[in-house]
Length: 261
Image 1 (cartoon, rainbow, N blue to C red):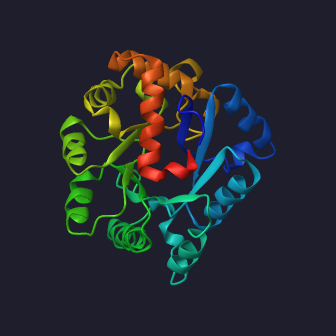
Image 2: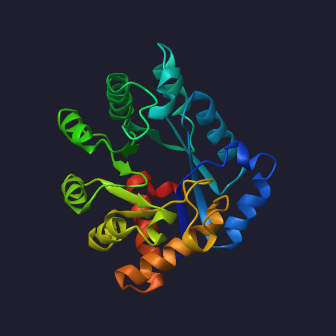
């Protein structure tokens, strides 16, 4: 088992085309910044495979496999079988990212909901956690999941709900991750939520290459920037950095399995 004093990026997309040819440098940057583990999230079958490839190449990398609501048009009769097979890889931690996105509405909402339920149930059936993307859709997400069996764990990635929704989700034992948006001047709601949530339910992410934290805003985001958000979170919660690091590692072990961290 590794030391429990390091940082984890629980949600990145290093397979994104913005990182082509730079993976070694990006991982090295992260390690130098104290970010020892990077979980790359698949958004379709192809990017799920690419996330696994990165996990095979780099000891620091892990993977999740899923189909993002923006990509759900790629879902077909073979998708569940493909994901089930991919999920057998020892470095795959969860089914994700999956979810509902009513902000962009790139896919009709009824289609999003249908396949979200199928993917959620896949995680239940193969006993893995889920990593969920929900944007402007909690009014539907909450009643849908209350009718479904519970997976091994739930991470609400890039959580964008308010304190009331956070409370409801925390009562269900769901986990929450936040990235660079926490540091943005207008992110009062996120700061309210992540100062309120129990420490044992919080994780940090980058969503690389998107949403770089304020000191690097406007640049391509990368896992090496996790410390900016981490330091901001420690100040926000008025806690010392070492104890917060240990808590975040413990949270990842509980959600994804201690053998990976």
